[in-house]
Image 1 (cartoon, rainbow, N blue to C red):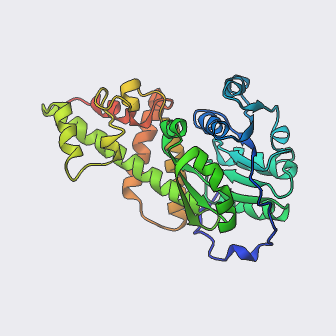
Image 2: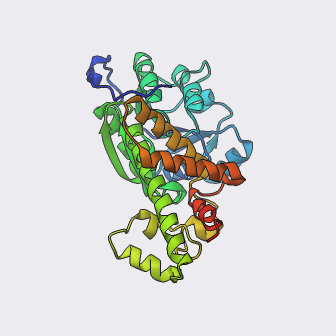
Length: 320
C-alpha cells in the first residue's frame, strides 16, 4: 500500500450526521491481547459495559475474568454497542474487521462511534473513514503509545485523527484507558504521529543499547554509566524508563528476560510501515533505515517475541 501525505481537504466535505450525544456506555472491544486486554479491563473499571471479541478462545476466557462479556464474532460484539474500540495486528486484519461482510461497519448500529487504536498504514483509516460515514457511523484512528505497562496502568497516550466532533466524543473512553489524548488532525494523522514516534523510539533504543554496550566494554560500571546518561544531555525515555541493560531499571523488560514489553517483531512492523510512508513522500530516513535493518537481524535470529530492547544482547555478542 503506497504511502501519501495526509489529506488536505477538509473532512467537512464528507456527509455530516448528527450522532447521539448520550454517554457511550455500551462498548465493543476487538482484540484482547497484551494491550487490548488491559485497555478493555480499564474501561470496565470506569463503569463501561464491555463486550469483547478475539479469535483466541484462551484470550476471551482471560478477559471474562476482568468483567468483559464474551462475544463469539465481530458482529455479535458490535451489534448493540454505542462505541467500538479495536487494537489489531496488521493492515489486512483491520481492513477485514471493519469492511468485511461480517465486519464492524456492516453490523454496527447507526450513530455508533468507531475507534481504531491499531498501528497501521495511514491509508488504512483513510479507506475506512468515508465508508463509515456513508453507513452512518463515526470513525477515528487513535493509535497508542505507552506499551503494555501503559495499557495496564491506564497511562497510554492516544494520537487521534478524524473529525473534531468524533474526537471530542471519544474522550471519555480514551481518558478511561490513558493519560493523554491528542487530536493530530484529519483522518490518518494519528497514524502518522504514531509511526514517527515509534521510529524515533526504535532509533533511540538502538543508540542507547550501542552506547551502553560500548561504555561497559570499556570498563565502566553499568550503574554509573546509566546515572551519567540520565543526568546529562543524552537522557531519553530509553535511558530513564527502558534501559536495555538487565538489572538497571527493575520495571524495564530487560530486567524481566526481555518479556512482557513491545515485541521486536512489532517494532519491525512499525518501522517498515514508517519506512513505506517516508518513501511515498521522499522523506530521507537514514537512521530509520539502519534501525529497521538491525531489528530485522534480531528477528532473523529467532528473538522476534522478545522486547525490542533485546538488540542490546545482539550488540553484546560481538567480540572486542
